[in-house]
Amino acid sequence: MTSPADVPHLTPNQINALVVLMVEARRVTNVELKELAGFTLTGTDNKKLVDLGLVDTDRTHRPFAHELTEEGWRVVRQLHTSPPPKQGGSTTRSLFVVLTNLHRSLDRLRVSHGDFFKQTDAVTPLASEPRHEAPAAAAADVDVEALVRAAYRELATSPGAWVGLADVRDRLADTDRAALDAALRTLVGRDDVRIIPVANTKSLTARDRAAAVRIGNEDNHALAIGPA
Image (tube, rainbow, N blue to C red):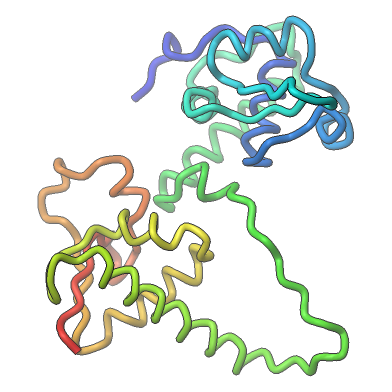
């Protein structure tokens, strides 16, 4: 577990900036920060976060835009392991309670912070289109199954070879996680598909654990699809 020493000392404003950038999971301008959270990331707060390598700030045009770096993601995921700054008062302490519970919940669900907050493009049906909810959902499931099979064919060295679900998820990064999990649970019932847990759990990386799919009350990490 990451210790408090791995988290730099930050002011309440700097913490707030990191948290907003995490939940937005994208590049955010100062104008958007002002609208979303009531503050902008400028001056010494911006300089410190950039100097620490936590935030990448685009200064090529105004308004300046900010995005978490890989190190920024690491630190914001671990903020709850350090004591909240005293000058933040009850608001910051409450935020740390939220971060602690968020971390615990995502760990239980085996979902990464990045996946949880990932931006997705919502598709809004045209007002004139008739809505047939059940058939649409069924079609979506079939499409995702096809995507999984296509990703497997690209990754596997031969039909029936084992492929990690982490690699499959990387290939299908634009696919909704819930839809992908549902497709995997459907596929495991097919005669040519096997999805299993890795027996040696010590060999699993954090990436493997985050990519696992829950089937039969256990986490599964590898996929094999035999010849058609």
